[in-house]
Length: 127
Image 1 (cartoon, rainbow, N blue to C red):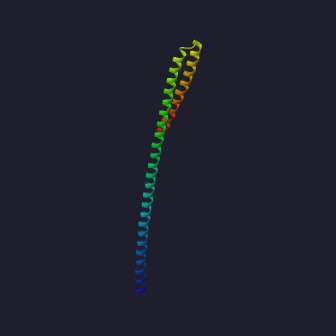
Image 2 (tube, rainbow, N blue to C red):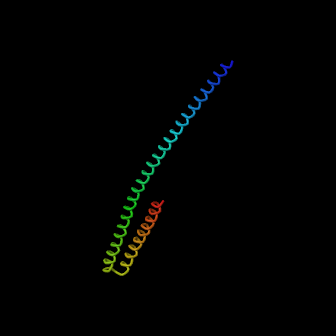
Image 3 (cartoon, helix red, strand yellow):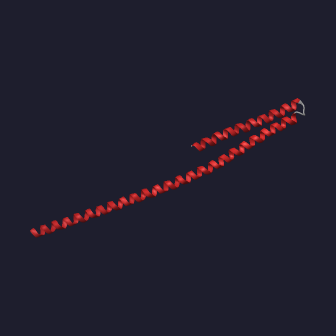
């Protein structure tokens, strides 16, 4: 009976050790899986960040080009106003005033749109 008890104790002890080893191996596997998942998530975040930054840079270039185009349009309107004023000097006073008012109105609209667009684009870039 004593030898059976000793054998049973030894068997239980081996099972405990085996179970503890399996638990430790499971914990190592779990830790490695967590680390792998975290590494993959970090890599995805880095890729996403790089893609977003590239998109923002690209959008910024397009916005800057659009602003330059609007500024060119404003300069063209200014030149048109000057040309119209020169031509109007050879016409009757009412015609000159009417032309000047129309061109000034267009100039104001273009400048207002330019300012509005620049503010909106700047706000978008800052966000």
